[in-house]
Amino acid sequence: MSDFDTSDVDADPELDELLARAEDGDATAMVRLGTICVEENLTAKAREWYNRARETGEPTAYHGLASISQAFGQNAEATELYEQGIAAGDDECYLPAGQLMLLVGRSEDAIDLLQRGFASGVSLCGTTLANHYLRAGKRDEAESWFLRAARHNEPAAAHVVAQIAQARAPVEHAIELHTFAADLGELDSLIAADLLADWRTDDPDELYDLADDGDVGAMVSLGRSIAQEGDLSEAVEWLSAAVEGGSIRALTALGDAFADAGDAEEAEHWYRTAAESGDRLGTY
Image (cartoon, rainbow, N blue to C red; front, side):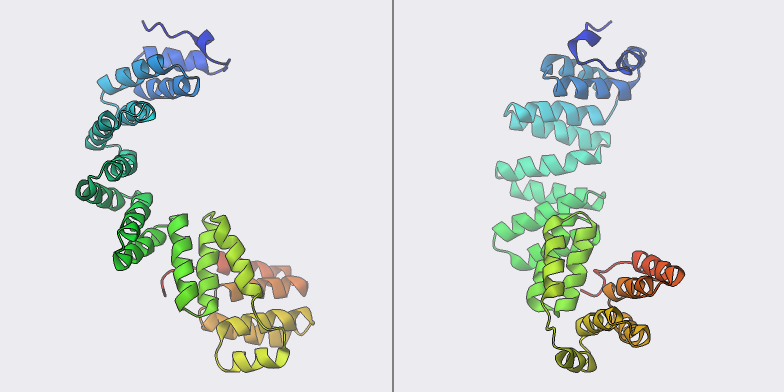
């Protein structure tokens, strides 16, 4: 029987049940107790529960033990434990193991490990690789990994891809990519998308000229402006043309236009279409 005492931690109505499950051999409960002990700064007891879970073959126990070693600056021991976790089947160990290897100069090992982690579905491994190549001055490799990570819905990588597009591509495409990153939770991209969307002429004649020349962003801005003036028919014409040009924002703008016109059913259709529009990184 462990000397773990529920009085050692803050009261939790589920803690007694968790302890009982752990004592009955539930490895998941053991890991959870280890995590609770870490949160309560009960390091020795945390190690005890993680080690007991490891003895049952629980893969995630290695991550817990490694994180404790890492917190105490025992990087070599932490790296070894993370690698053992990977071997046991815990993919979440790839990223911290790779980061520690980079920290101590084991670049080749780190690159191999991070590539394996990315292939296993840990998208942050791709962003970590991209940043490593960027620091090494290898911009092509860095951009390639940022793009690959972004296509796996990694927010920070999506933001970088949007910044690259902002420097090289039409502003509308940069807005699309920043919006994609913002949807993933990247606040900087949310701000950038709004700023870029506002960075357009307010001159109707110039907007018409740009739209006539095929500028999809101008079509969206023009359609929004016309919708606000109450001409739904012409607004839909321009926004539909923008949709044909590949604009996702135009789908949302169509929803806004119909909502402002009082057609809730049609507005819902366009909002739903925008939400289901697919991968906005596909044309980058």
